[in-house]
Figure 1 (cartoon, rainbow, N blue to C red):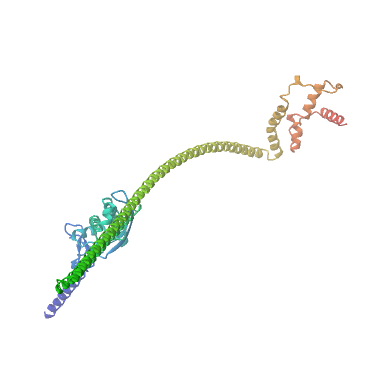
Figure 2 (cartoon, rainbow, N blue to C red):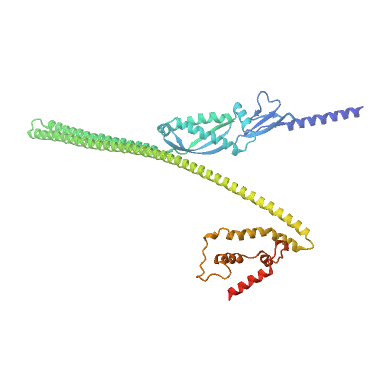
Amino acid sequence: MQEAIGMLLFSGALILIGAIIWLMNRYKRCPSNKIIVVYGKGTGTTTAKCVHGGGVMIWPLIQDYSVLSLEPMTTEIDLKGALSKKNIRVAVPSTFTLGISTNPKIMINAAERLLGLTKKDIIDQASDIILGQLRLVIATLSIEEINQDREQFLDLINANVNTELNKIGLEVINVNIRDITDESGYIDAIGQKAAAEAINKAKVEVAQQEQQGAIGVAEANRIKEVQVAEQIAQSNIGTTNADKEQRIKTAQIDAQAVEGENVAKANIAEYNATLAVKQADALRTGEVAKANAERDVLLAQKEREEAKLKKEELAQQEVEKLKIQVQADAEAEKLRRIANGEADAIKAKYFAEAQGVKAVLEAKAEGYKKLVALSADKPELATSFLMIEKIQDIVDKQVEAIKNIKIDKVTVWDGGAGSQNGSTTANFLRNLIKSLPAMHDLAKQAGIELPEVLGKVDDSIAAEIKAEEKSEET
């Protein structure tokens, strides 16, 4: 009994230890730089459950999990040709650092849209969104607003870009605008104008300080001279009021004091004149710089307008060129199709003729085959039959040679000798007919002996013809 109880306790301990190990394996802890995304049954009303920090139990069969990294991602945005509020194109190269947000609502967006994507895929999506929002922000600002209030510019970029990136679960960590330039040089002109104004202001302040210094020095000198004269006069007067010489000296000292005052006033007037000249020079320099800056801006605007007109003209020329090319291509395609149709018709015609010739030749070949089979014992009969088949063509050619001769129009000149064997015209016709090769002779030249049913030249006629030919030769 005790052994049974001991076994039960041991089995229960094993089951308990197994359950604890199983629970430990199914409980997933999330580090601070990652997000655990639990999906499947039991995730609540959302499509997934996102856990950042802490841990979560993953139930087998009905749940599974994946991990999203919170590692910052950097993308270089080389924005060029963005159109500002005053239709001036600017280039704003910048660097954006972004990452997956830990905001619970935004984490769900990341789980739905970024889970399973590579880091490169996430950066590509974010770059497209950032590029579009940058163009949108620049379109709402003028060049002066972009260039002078960088803080406002960055705030607008952060607000617009963050709003769109949050939709896919991302947020902006840092924005670094490396430079702001424009194609027309307007920003440079503004900088030159500001620099010229600062230089002019500094020159005016220097002149004012010099003026104040000169006045102070002159005032100090005057006070010194007056005080010295007063002290000397009082000393002399105190020594003896009745001394005439002392009074004269006192008068001289007074005169010197007056003279010192006059010199001081003259110096002040001279400094004032010098200051006025310097102020006029500074003002003139500032106005010249301002005029130059305005001229540069106008020249830049003129060049931009000329470039715009030239671009529109080139675009129109390109359109005309494309229209001509399309028309030429259409005409060439039409001619090509017509030529292909004619070629197909000719091909079909020749093919049909070839088929007809082939059929005729095959029929003749079959007839020749049967003819050879019928004349197996006497093969010369087959040759004779074939020759007979061509006799009609030979005769036709011979008749063709003389059929157009009009006998009543033939005149034979024999030099007045006449003829012993009939009229000259008759002899001419006879000789003409004799000049035609005889059918039997043609057959013999081909190595064929025609049957007697086709006729035979009489021996006496043949002898007569040969005799005449011999006499003509002599």
